[in-house]
Image (cartoon, rainbow, N blue to C red; front, side):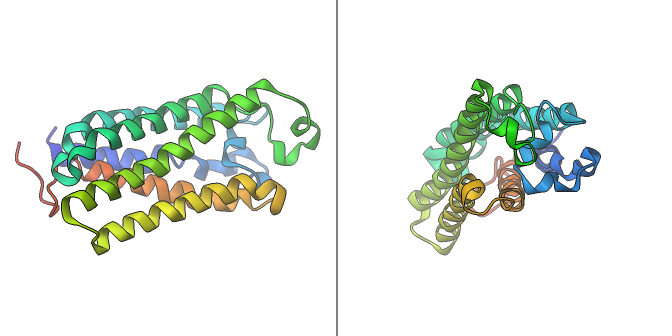
Length: 217
């Protein structure tokens, strides 16, 4: 498979696998999107394995992009390519752990379960924090790499601004259950769509130079 076709396939796979939450109607409860998207994969939910498999598939795609990105992004972001690849790999690891330690229940619709102490819940939360931190670091590292190669350009400012927006969405979704219950789902939808589009872009930028031309293999 040619590099151009491979990067297109990887970008498409990111968008499909990381947005398995779009199959939420299978859950059968219209309230499901008021809680965290990970509640779709909770242990007491129908089709939980479908959503868990979607995340596992996404993590596998992230791993492939990260491996290729160590070298493939060098012409784009220079010496920050290995660091960005490591950050994406951590996103994948956190996504796997999110799936392994899935929530015991859909907490936004089960207050009794939500109030019950659970080690698995804490492990799930720790994995989610890892994903969140790694995602913001991934975007910030690309901005840093671009800045080191070309200065503080409009493109760098846009990427840095995107990192701030994603960080804001992540912080708000974490605080939403206490500040504005029921809004964490919609906020997380925006965040997941934005981050999947970003990682798809990273797949598309494999082996490109700073002007977006595909390097000849």
